[in-house]
Image (cartoon, rainbow, N blue to C red):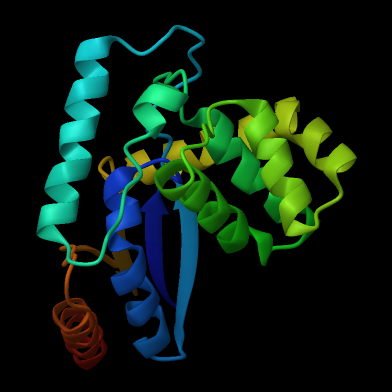
Length: 211
């Protein structure tokens, strides 16, 4: 079994910047590689307003990403229209709650959260936003709302966070390739899929030849 772990957070701005190249990478991966998505949990539950200094810092990060990765867009109205909180766990739990209804909704909910946050100036730290996104995706919203708040969903998030940390994937996005008894971190290239694909294929070939 060859496994490529993708560790992310739906409210991680660098994950948003990486999303297009990640889709290109997925499309070009050999079919014998199993891709496993893990939620890394960027920021724990927090009801306090985000300090203004942190708001300015994150807005500047958005500007750096837009400058570094051509084509990535951000709606800076978020910082005036919403009440930001440093809390991404609700969005992470939303991905799990959506996944519980159908695994395909893992990606769909992640993308919906990213579009809401970065393009539509909606706040995915708010349960109301997440339930609205579930409705827009066609999920059973009553079931989703219950799962969003359930202890089981939170425990699953903590398990994925623990697994990510055990692989030393504590920055997002992270790619970790596991083959045989070996594990490698694949450096993220935000503009090109080819270097990552080449390294993955090289590592698999080297490990296979050693067996």
